[in-house]
Every structure is written in structure tokens, then in C-alpha cells.
Amino acid sequence: MTSIFRTFLSGLIVLLPVAITLVLVVWLGGWVYTFVGPSSVVGRLLAALGFGFTTTPLFAYLIGIAIFAGVVFLLGVIVESRLQRHLKGLIDSVMQRLPLLGSVYDLIKRFVALMDRKDGDGLKSMSPVWCFFGGEGGAGVLALLPSPEPISISGASYFAILVPSAPVPVGGGLIYVPAAWIKPADIGVDALMSVYVSMGVVSPVRTGDNRGVVTPVQPAPQLTGI
Picture 1 (tube, rainbow, N blue to C red):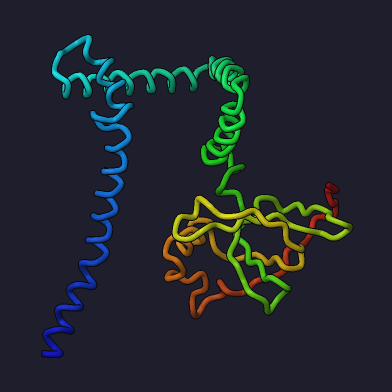
Picture 2 (picture 1 turned 180 degrees about the vertical axis):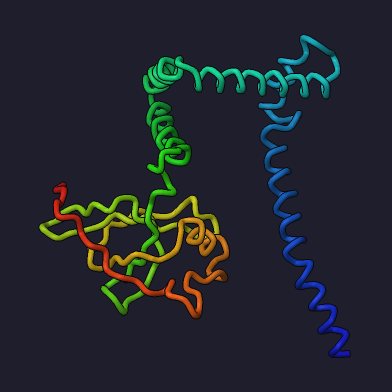
């Protein structure tokens, strides 16, 4: 009986990742359908675009999606052309004049720009580091170092670090910590994100190699005061 149960459990463990993946896909699909499906506010707006071509609600919705996709594609063509600067300037000028929405728009624009940079000055250029609170031997946290330039706070050298949240690493916190607490982690940004997405199941240190060896970050000679 024990052998049968163990065999069944082994098969269940193999299927569990597939089942969880399917559940997440279905959940995400349901979430998207709730906000952009035919019965949603966005869906009714898309259907309104298509009612000029057909009276069937479903076909009108699909035509609306096609029209919207075409407009987005045309906008992309314009952005990649020489009109990019003028178009962005016009949109920024209009949005930033709106009370409250202007501040939200500016924040979202900065975040999207950080994700979209292709010149190495975005998320990929950040350095994974260990932060040992209280100094070496204290509690360690994997974080991202946005800039290797320390700042001076009350005459002491500090680094700004981003600590992601688990299992959704797009959140987290910004913390200023003493420079002596920071040591580089010999892993990439993708590996760091994998650690947080797996909630620690994926280890940042592999047995048998030197990925766990850390060396002190050398502070920049010039400190920027605040």
C-alpha cells in the first residue's frame, strides 16, 4: 500500500507544476477578460468602433480590437520615425497639465522608460548585491544596486538599494544603507528575480562554485551630498 501511495505521489509531483501553470494561465486569462472582454467597459468601447461595419456584437467587438491594434501599430511606426520627439512632447504636455493625473502619468512614464531602455541603462544594468544588515555576519538580503555612486548622509557613505518582494518582484522597497553593508553578488539580474519568484526555493549560492564568494564594493572617490 505504501509503495502504491509513493508511486501516486511521484506522479502527482510531476504533474503539479503543469497544473499550477495552467491554473495561473486560466486566472490571468479570466482577469484580462474581466477588464477587456465584450461585457467590460473597454469591450463595449471596442464594440462601438466595430458597429459601423456590422450589427453582430461579437464581430463588432473583434473588428474594434483590430481597429485598436491598427491604431497602436500606426502609433508605433510614428514613434520610431522622426516624429517621435514631437509626439512624445505633445502627449507629455497634455497629460502633465491635468491635475493629479499628471503626477501619476509622470511616475508611470518613468517606470515604463526604465523597463524599455535598450542602451544598458535600465533594469539590466543594475547590479545584484548582498546587503548584510548590521555588517557582515548579520541578516543578508539580495537586492539591486541602481547606481554604484554612493551618497553622503551626515558625513557617512550610503548606497541606495532596491529590495524586491516575493513572489512578485516588481514591488519592493527602496532602502539607503551604509556602504560597508553592501557586497556584490556574483549572479545576474535574471537569477536574482528567479530567487524571489521561487520564494527562496532557487538558491543564489550553488554548492561547489564561487557564486557565494563576495568582495567589498569599492566606494567611488567622489561622494554626492544631499
